[in-house]
Amino acid sequence: QVQLVESGGGLVQPGGSLRLSCAASGITFSIYTMGWYRQAPGKRRELVASITRDGNANYADSVKGRFTISRDNAKGTVFLQMNSLKSEDTAVYSCNADHVYLPTSRYWGQGTQVTVSS
Image (cartoon, rainbow, N blue to C red):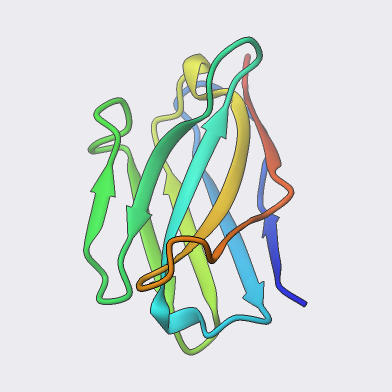
């Protein structure tokens, strides 16, 4: 059974930092591109950042320079370090796993709430 379990969300003041983690099980982690998506109330889900199995990262323009995605293939975990948080970063953040060769092999975590507010 495949599981992606996120942790690290919470309430933080503007300008603060959070580190999200996503632990994967039931998949061969190293052959999946991993991503973080977010969805704010009333808005469409958007890609925040992704990282290939080789460590190549891609970011949404809105988070470049503030967020950093990383992965530990040995531990099957992907991280999202979020700095200089803004109120507009408030959303449910979900972890995603995309198989490198099989587009239909795609998995999602349950999501973790991030709220940026004073």
